[in-house]
Structure formats: C-alpha cells, structure tokens
Image 1 (tube, rainbow over the protein chains, first blue to last red):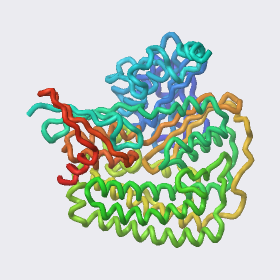
Image 2 (image 1 turned 135 degrees about the vertical axis):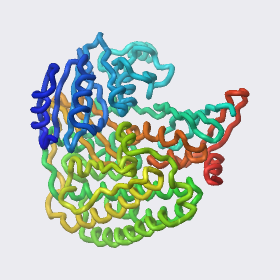
Image 3 (image 1 turned 90 degrees about the vertical axis):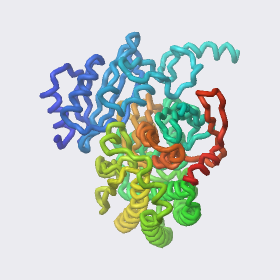
Image 4 (image 1 turned 30 degrees about the horizontal axis):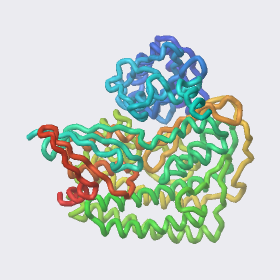
Length: 157
Length: 387
C-alpha cells in the first residue's frame, strides 16, 4: 500500500504498461495520471487489480476548448487518485468503465448527457438529468456556441 | 399474480428533489426499482462558471438546505487549495464545530422522520423537540437556522464568544444524554425493531461496489469516513472514532447515525476546549491562480466532493459537485428490491434523502388489466405502518 501520493505515482509509472500522458503528485494525498482515452478501461482494470478495494468518488467532465476532459476521481487507502482522459471534440466517445466499476453507472450517464461524450459499452445509456424533450446534440456543460443560443436571441429580439 | 409496474413521482417521492422512481412489483414484493432524476435541475454547476468565486460561495450554500455548510466548506477548501491560503487555526476549529452541529441537526431530523415513517410518532415529537436545542445554538452562532453562511473564503464569518461557548456546552451535554437515550430506545423498543430489523438490507461489499457513501456504507460494516481518510480541518487533533455497524439494515443505519450524534457532541466539546485565540479570517485574493483541485468533506449523508478548475481569472472554468445522495442512489435501489411495498418508505428513507412534507401521489398502474389506481403518499405511509 502506497503511503504518499508520489509513491502511488511512482508505482503506476513502474508497473502500468500502457502510455501515460501525465503522472504527477500535486500534494501529499493527490495523485494525477493521464491516459489516452482508448486506454481508460485498461487503467481502471490496473487500479482495481493493484489497490482493491478502490472507491470511485465521481467522474467530472470539463470542456477545455478543443477537448473534453473526463476525470475519474478514485480513492484508495487515504489517497486521491485522479485519472484524466482527454477526448477530442468530434470523436466524442470513450469506453465505459461501468462494467468494471459499477459505481460509475450514474456518473457516466451524467457526463454523457451534459458534455456529449458517448460511453461505449455502458449497460444503461439513458438520460439521467435532462428532460426527455431536450434537443439532441445540445450539451449544457459544453462551452462552445450551442444550437439553442441563436434561437433564444431571435426570440428576444 | 400479474406483475405490476408503477411510477412514484416526479411530484412525490421520498426525496428533497422531485424524482421519478419506477417500481416493478410481484404481489407485495418489489422485484425491480429504477430512478429518473433532473426534475429540479438548477444548472448550478454551469452557473458557477459564469460567476466569480465570491458569488459562487453563495450559490453553493444553496445547493442543499440541510447540508448547506458542508457545501460551502467543500467549495472553500477546494478554492483555498488553489490559492494556497492558510486558514487560521481558530477558524478551522469553528468550521469543524459548525460542521458537527450540522451533522447533529441533520441526523436528529432524519431520526424523527424515520420514526414517523414507521408509525412511531412519539419518537418524531421527542427527537424534534431536542433538535431545537441545536437549532437554537446554530442560530445563536450564525444568526440563521438554515443557511448559516458561516464558512467564507479564507475562514469563517463569525467568532464564537465565551458567552456562546457556555451555552453551547450546556446544550451539547443535554443532546449527548438524549442521543444515548435514543440509542437505547432504538435497540430495545420492540415495535420499532420489528419495522427496521432486516429491512432494506445490503451487504458491505455490494455497498462498496455501488459507491455508497457515509452512514449507508458504515452501517454495512465498512469503516470509511472522509474525516479519517483525508483528515481535514482539525479532525486529527481530536479524539473520536468512526462508528460502524454490521447489521446492514435500516436498524444499522439508525444506530450509526445516533452514535454519530454522540460523537459529534464529543468532537465539538473537545474543539471548544482546544480552540486557540486568534484571527478567524485570512485575506483572500480576488483572482485564483491557474490550476485544479478537488476537496472532499464528510457531509452528514456521506462523502461530498467538489472539483474546481481555474484559469487564473476571478471566474472558475468548472465547478463540479457530487452530492452523497447521488452516490447512495444505486444502493438504495438495491435495498428496496426484494423487500415489501410497505417497506419502500423506510428503506428509501434510510439513505437520508431529503423528505419534503407535501402530499404526494403514487400511481399504481396495473399492466395486466390496463386499469390504474392512485394512491397518495400518506396512504402508502399508512400501508407502511400497518405492516
């Protein structure tokens, strides 16, 4: 069991055999690692196999302009392990980790509908928060111009 | 018997938010449960990235009426991590005291309502009478009974004076005794035990898999508490322990919460003893340096996590909030499944979703015959009590 976040990061660098886009301990308890979006399930598998039981706090989606970052916030043994996977806009899909981590079921649905990242292999990909008649392709937490913005202006003008 | 599927809500269910639950029942047994959220979606996360850090403080306070302090605390901790502002030690103690006060009031509120759900109304009356003690204390300290607005960026807004301290100690002594009395009632009162023992069961392993949090997780024998997992404020300076129960049912969740009230009194009393003199607020910059941070606190319902990202301006790029109720919902669905229809209210209540008092409606839709009949929430509660 790792004692500090930097030891956790070192262990991932030594034992994880996929590509890492970043690996850094930002404090004694916060570790950040990045993986290409296609490897996210492999990383989840690695984390579960290495540190079980692992607790998934939540999944955050952030629009950074050209990409949507999907952040997985894991907790293991008093340390916060955050995994970042940046999905290019236009690709808009990432493997679901729900088959490996059942706790992700609602969090992935939330990211999918709020930021438009399709979760490939999600067992229950329905909407969670938005109404049934919400327009397709309009994602409230994306920061670029939204299809409904212009209509609103016309209505007001 | 034909299998029935009936929706509960959106204008109804046992939650602070109107939510749509769908139960499939075979006779009196629930065979499947599903949930649909979003009926009170207020776009708070989006709004946060359109307001500055100080305005967001007020917005986050209003995510929830019961755990408002936990929200501002987690938000402030995340932003303070980014700015590297040191919160004065006295402010940290005051934050911790108010954090525990909130736990006391919330757990007592829950205990009363769960008593009501199983038809044990005198429990509701007594518990809510005692809850007034902590409400008065909160009002004395912060000026408010609901949104205390105590936590602010860099510290707390109000100090605890020696006069207040004396009244707090007096109140907490009474509350501590009362909580121990309720712990005794909950384990010995036969009518109560009959309604909560082996109801809404879920194993610890399953809880962990589904990501359940807080008392729900601890009542299934798993010792996981953010206050010990990621010690924040001054929790590592006081002597207390995480209380767990192996019962895995509603009784277990009741005992964990009652015991946490006792612990919360002890933590607050120790904090009052240890609290040093000094400043209660640090100067806070208007602009927050570029970066990202997560902050976790143990709110009364479980782990509450905030993620804040800054681009160096005075407006955050992203504020993400995950409330403990969302984490507990998959577990709640499993608790209800396999139980009786009459146990739905108490089993669902046991994760402590917020219960608003308005009259609610359940539609029982008979798939086989195509007939449907309606049932109001009080009727469902009454059915719960007849059990």
